[in-house]
Length: 253
Image: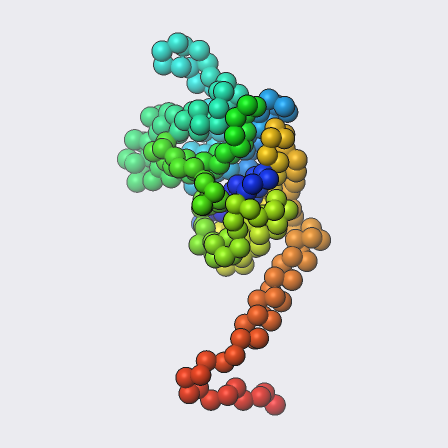
């Protein structure tokens, strides 16, 4: 299991991914799931992965090493395309190619072909965009009405995003809310864990402004975790008790 989230706001983009993978309770490892493809000033692309690790690594390798165009024979990589829409299409084609090579054998072994990717970034002259690409190779795009997308174990980190994130959220605030969303998921699901990789891209900057790994000793993240827990406790304690006939709580001796 994993958790990755992308937030596309007016001033830029935040992508956050955990690094835990597990194949059973006693087989846990750390693998990078947030991948950066950058030519500063020309394009900046992030790809975050969830699902079967073997599939996602094969897809990332195809994006880097390239695939032959079926008509021209030209080898195309993630750096070959003039728009983010065409980049997302290429990622979908890479997924379908991995399925062509391995999908039937996996199904024969009763292993599901499970992979989902967040593809985000900007090519010079185009818009900053965020896509979610499914295992069939099709995709959806984040919009001003729905400015964030999640993959993996998303349910624990979703409530804070639903309540607090809008397209007009400031970029540092989006990063903070994304980290709270990640912490909420880590606290509630053992299949999601640190270190956490983050990437921040400012709109029209065409470069990665922040590329950082947060580990268990990170002072800001530890403070954020404690402050958020304390704020939740204070909030529910400040709400009046339900007026439905329950007796008042008895003080402990």
